[in-house]
Length: 180
Image (cartoon, rainbow, N blue to C red; front, side, top):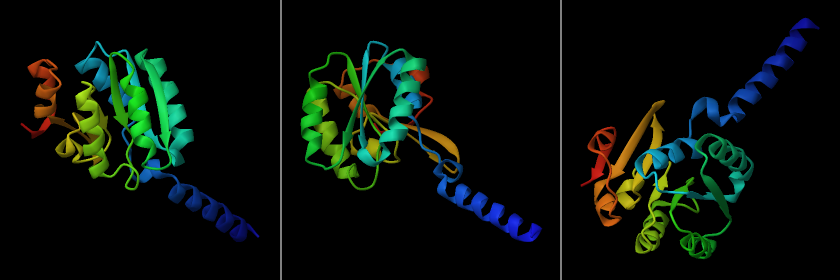
């Protein structure tokens, strides 16, 4: 009876461990990206977040935490289909002193879509931040992600110039420059 109970507990524990993404792969949070926004562009008053709808519960919790810590207005927009992106960008473009964070996935927010969004935002002078590797090569200003459990911060200096954003050199030195 004890062995059967032990196996049952072990099975439940294993199911819990394997279903928990946070133990095996970390994702940069809205709070972490928001902190970079706050330090690099203090004039930003609103942080707009685009995210895939399947992550809604986690994003809502993360956005509340980001607001509490950063004291910046956080506006979240869920995306179920790619055609919704243009409408959401149009809404975001109406804000003054705004930056956009994209919590990426492989389907809706592929890198081609990041380039499209960045182009639309650049026309309005809005910086784009993401949580995925190589997005700076697709015109995101900053991307932060975990690689082998180590946080990496990447910067697109060309976007910094296009957006006419002045940032201290000691801040830039903390980043890996992907695009000069």
